[in-house]
Image (cartoon, rainbow, N blue to C red):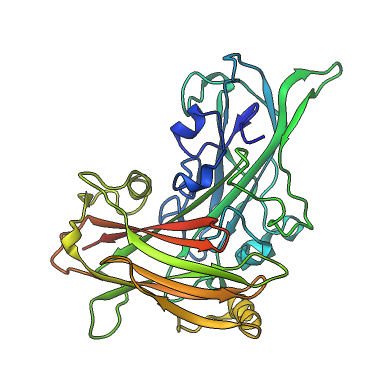
Length: 382
């Protein structure tokens, strides 16, 4: 069943209004910008983490109205989350992509931050309505501190893909002697799971994913010498454990009309650039963009992961004809559980005023049509 029972992790208000109906869901919207998954106590904002700074993952759980309009009590028993490399994967994840600092901090849960105990939740009156037990923003137990080993060069911050899942009881009733009985819903990921078999955001309203990265342009931003090109490093990943996967990577600008894209704006207003005069950058301010292979040297755990994949890499990256101006596409074949470091290169007009924001979607589509992505905001800073 794709419709939520009892509670869910809503992508946004529309997802909650539709009772978490995930029928053909991942083909219809940008599902990797979940509004109810974030980092707390990060000086860089809710989707970025600074090396050496402890942060907490927060997950918003909300009760749902039953299809017949009735309300019933539910119980949240477990909430888990993982900080992964922001690879544009199709609704799933893999233990191989969990950041090394998180794996070492909590190996019993493959980087997972368990468990929120038994807490009653009641169906709500409005989206993110926190009174009367209708919505909980749960700060998961323990903190996570990124290390330099997490970085995908040339990035200077850890851009997080946060994957979360929840489990509990729908149609819950108190039991004599304490506790509750009800209909089990959601997913609890065991410590020996590879995540790929348990995580499927495309079908499970009890799960969510947030992949948003903010790239500052100007000031201390590193540039390619002699050019006006700015860079963002990320990974493409093949999650099949037993076969190679052909994927197409594409980056396209996101139309913003008269207001900064809502997902990016929410992140910017909670981060260090909140006081800038935030405004959508005109399309004329984008001089070019390109996807290319990342030739920067990766270190530590990430370097080992990439080296193991390249030993059985079947096909080098192939450029695909661009479908329209200001877009870029690559086709590549990834080995089983393989990863490929890539770069997004942006060339922007230096005349843009501080606070100007460009937004891009990097999407990965496999041979079955499954799609995932990263939403990237590039903001001009003083």
